[in-house]
Length: 619
Image (cartoon, rainbow, N blue to C red; front, side, top):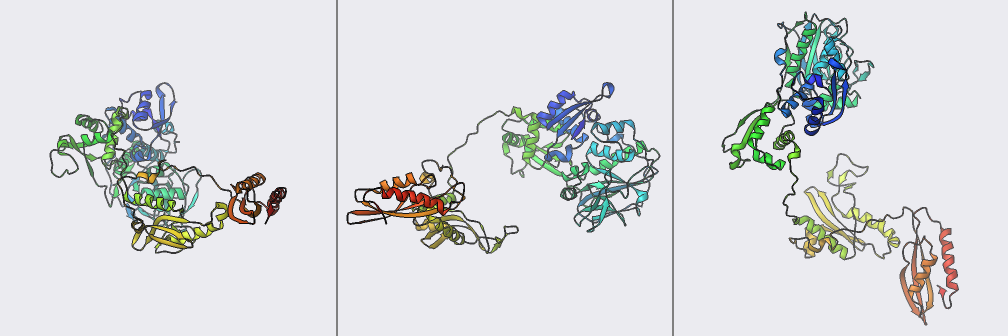
């Protein structure tokens, strides 16, 4: 957001130089993305482009909000402009406001007659241009000035273009259309979830986002309906994003605003229009405020604030900060109902009335951040906390590790299958196709994994595939940790507790050897080939003096780089002074799918070498 240095001086005349102010922003409030000079001499101004984060967007996307914050940080006076605002005697009104949706939390309306639309005063134009806004006319400029000044968006409708003196706040009718203000004048088709401002016949504005062409203020306008409202932030954000209409107004509403600020905005807007249109006639304000914002208090102690920040904070320091920020507070005496505060700490305890605009102050941690930010986080000395690093044994984790250790020792390999399946008792709202339920057992997924891995047994170099899984299942009675493993083709499944009881696994006060000598660190994963493998079995008669290692070395030499791993001896048979060694060779490429012709060429080379050896014969 762009902030004018001269504009800030309206409220804090004692503000330091722009160079010093940049450091204040950087070290206590937010990042300064740029600082640019505007004009020269008496017209000189400095424009800060500051990055206000979402947690403070509700009160700092305005010059007044930033000025109040700087007043508190620097301990300098803040000039409240409210007493300077002047509006003539109010006239009775026939304005009716029909609030039909709870997405509008407050709506204030006022009719102003006998206005004259024209150019804005020079000071208004310069203030708008300083922060990148163009001047349109005095009425529209007044609404923009108020938004940039106090943070609450406002709007003005041409009463002469409305069907009556009635304002209706409602959800749009599906298919309803509205043409927006501005140079582009985009026609927007609305849906039932879009909140609109309307009269009996037409949509006048997209609530909190942008005004409509229907009641646009122009040079012929003589009567206005002023709108100052507060809308639900989620509704505004969804509408702005769905229609791709991102405005200064929607930016403020979607970050939430206090409904209490609407009163001030209406006063400021009325006074500004009266200043530019001294003959204007103002009618009474119609204020629909179904659920006023609740007043909130917060109790905290200097000791607890210090514990959160990691430094000692005295009661005097906290009291000084509260005074600088103009917080209403009282020192709390000894009270029996303050159960969360220590008795020895009650003398340094404060109870504050949280300002309506400070929606970010919710709990003790927020106040600690506020005080720490004001004092400066550089005062927090780096100190390593005293922590007992002895791990506390989690019973469930211990049982899982022990069960895994047992099954791995028995030659099983662990697998992890999907937690979602085609059937079950707990349906999920969003899921992949054909997986609409949370699994109610492990055996279905483990059975599928067993079938797939059995096909790859030659590639894995094993005779029997042994798999297990430890995971959570979801039944109508709740979640349960279970263990499943295969006994040949049969799958055994039981609860984790039953498995531990069956195998005499008792929970210890330490993880001990369960993590292994390497602390649980395993070898890095080596990816396998995406391409299929080909196996060849070869049995050869050799003299009894020839060992299987000799044949293995031959296969490795002739198997080329396509031979995957070492040849595996699968059978041995001796007869009449000769021994038959049967090996299984697995071929695979990481770059392509192999063909039978390629493998046959390799095998022919192996056969030719065998024929050259005396007493060797392929079976």
